[in-house]
Length: 188
Image 1 (cartoon, rainbow, N blue to C red):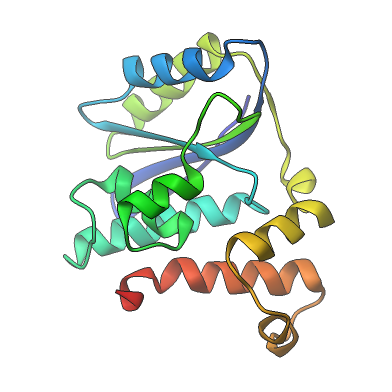
Image 2: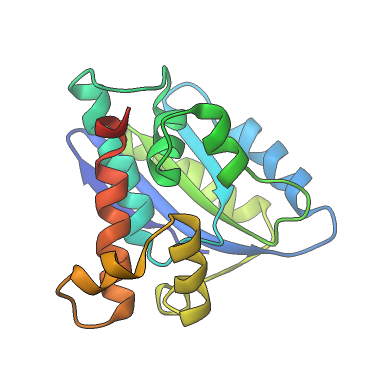
C-alpha cells in the first residue's frame, strides 16, 4: 500500500484508494483509524466509488487547508472540511450520507494530513502494517465505469462535459469535479 504525498503551506498530505480484504474489513479499518488519528494527525476515510483520480482527494485536502487558512471554512474540523469538499456538499449530514463508509463498502479512500512529516510517515507505516488492502492504482481509477459513476455522483450534465475543452471524456469530467470541489464554499 502506497500513499501519494504532497506538501502544501506547512501541511503534509497523503492519499490513496484501496480495496478492502477480509470479512470484517470496515470495522477493523475504522478501529485502526481511530487508534492512529488524533493530536497532530488527521485521518479521513470515505467511500471512494466516485474517485477517478487521486488528484480529487489531494485537491479536496488542499482546498480545505486553504479554507481554514483564509477562515472561510464551513466545518469546525479540517477532516470534515475535506469530506465536505470531496463530496461537493455544504451540509455535513449530506456529505456523510454521500461518502460515509458502511459495512457494505468494498473500497475506501484515505486522506492523512499532518503538519509534522515524521508523524505523517509514522502513521502511514503503522497503517500499512495493520490493514489488509489492495491498492487501486491511478490508472484503474480512470475506468469508464468509474467515470460514469462520478458523473452521476456529482450531477454533471452532458452540456457541462461538452463545454469543456479537454483531450477526452475522462479529462473533462475530472476538470468539472475539481471545479466543484474548489467552489464548495461559494455554493453556501
